[in-house]
Structures are given as structure tokens and as C-alpha cells.
Length: 172
Image (cartoon, rainbow, N blue to C red; front, side, top):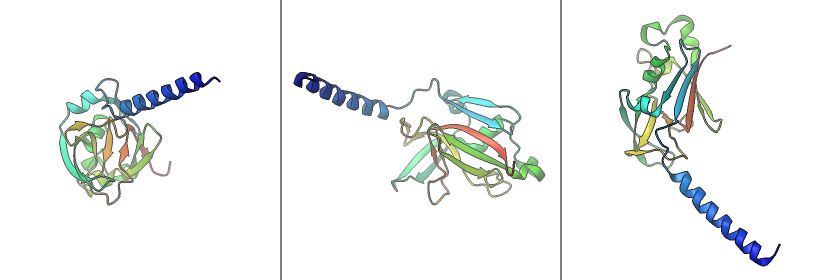
């Protein structure tokens, strides 16, 4: 390869990395984003970002991995699960107490919760499907959707780039 070709490729690589970094920081658009709720549900549901923004909103303040407190806005997880007919409240008894929720990110990361721990009749742990942090849409490294569990001491169950929620029966 000639010197001018090496210089050209080197310059192009720099431009591509700068453009790639800019794209990675761009907030996700409302269109095309969908959260799928599936598994042991009455009906599988696909909720777009617009659908989620049309639901009852909640805000929580919680410390992120960096230790800084951020204000997150989104929809409480039980409200999302209700859309798919997942049992809650008085219906959460017997075999339904073996139900678990598995939240999965687009990169394959997963976190699990028992359904009972998020039910107000049991412990009422808060989990929220968020689409903004500090009033801004989540960038592609965090969103467009993220599951935030403000009561957790560590953020291991916080799922960034949330794509699906699967309800499963433990032991099956």
C-alpha cells in the first residue's frame, strides 16, 4: 500500500470513529422502539415508546453506577405487566406466587425478579421502566428504555437497553 493510501485510510478511520461516537450519544427516536412483554401472560404485548409515554408516569430519584443521583421518569413495572394480563394483587396467590419476571437487554444482559416482590400486597419493591433521565431521553448506551430499581443497593438488576420482559414460572 502506498503512503497516500495509508494516510487516506487512517484519516477515514478517524472520521468514522468520530461519527460513530456522535451516533452513540444521540438520543433514540420515539419510532421503532418496542418493549415486548411475553411468556406466562394472558396476551403478549408490544409497547412502543409512545405507548409508554401515554401511560401513567412516575418519577424516582436514584443513585446510578456513578454514584450521582438522577431523576428518572417512566412507567412503574406493575402497570406495564397489567397490559399483558399478569396477575397482581388478590390474584397473586397459589401457583401464581412462583411467577418471575426476567428483564432482558438488547445485548443479552438479563436480570430476574419474583413477581411478588414488586406487588404492593407483598413487599412493594419499586421497579420502573424509564425513558428519561434528568428530563432528557436516554442515549443509545442506556436506552431508549431502561429498567431502574431504586431500592437496590447495587445496580446489578438495572437493565439498560431494555427490550423484553418475560414472565416465567419458577421450576419449569
